[in-house]
Length: 171
Image (cartoon, rainbow, N blue to C red; front, side, top):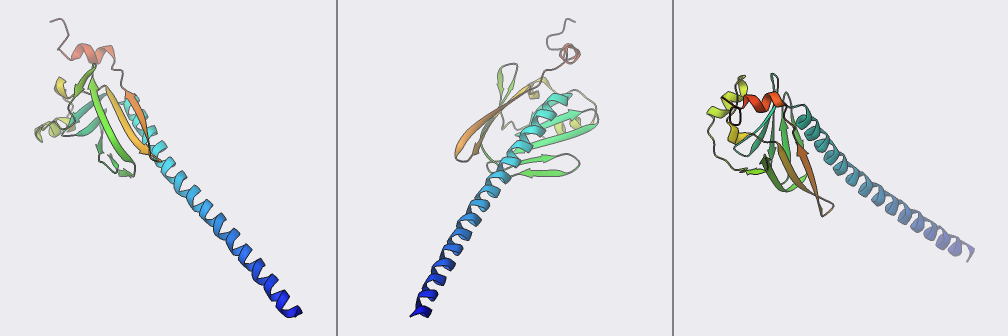
């Protein structure tokens, strides 16, 4: 009789210990998963802010955002389930992109413009890109934890850049 009671008590203790372990493990796994996705979201936000702030020029070619910083070239490709950033290395951020809007001087720039590869060669050289490809604002909507978050990035071009454009300059 005493042996049976002690076995029942031991079984209850083991069951409770296993249940507590299972709940703590699940909570930790959920916490780690959420923080990993949050870290990716923060990292892509930080990089986009930095690139917009320090860029000499921003252009949209065939749905990709190109950043010119002196001799350095960076491209962003916005897919439905990820954002790919290419510079010296390629970074893939696993975030769900719900929408993106590119603007220049409050005019929408079509994301799916079909300009040919010749423009990509201009990116590699130190030449001015055509005005209709310039971007000064990106509005990016990302789904995080099943709720949309909108990020807005703006580039303030210097007066020298704007005068050199030729489109509004006095000739």
